Length: 140
Image 1 (tube, one colour):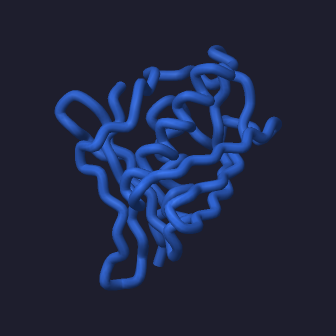
Image 2 (cartoon, one colour):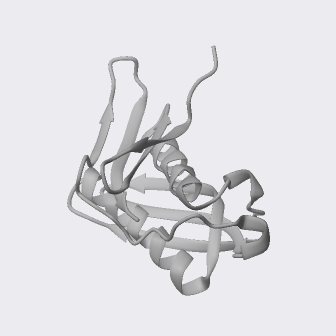
């Protein structure tokens, strides 16, 4: 059986991102790959440079939205794409590392610019099978 790690899903005006994992941390990491997939093919992004990201929020769902918005901010200000992630969660705090590279328009062929994570369809939960899901709609 092939286990799904992430997916994008349709939304009338925007795009949904969803990450799956055996832990919350893996689900957050895989959702970040789904974020990159909205823009370009993640396999085409080389992990050349590492950026550290920290977030703190009052609950897990807001922390997830903060994580995605922090990635969007780093992509925009550094003109980078990311494809590899390590996430650590502790007491509503996130510490993460994201690896990626400068955007090369001819090689990455970005399709859209993601503007922000929204609270629409925002969810972080553990299913009956023990699998975690982290998801939201992103504004494109």
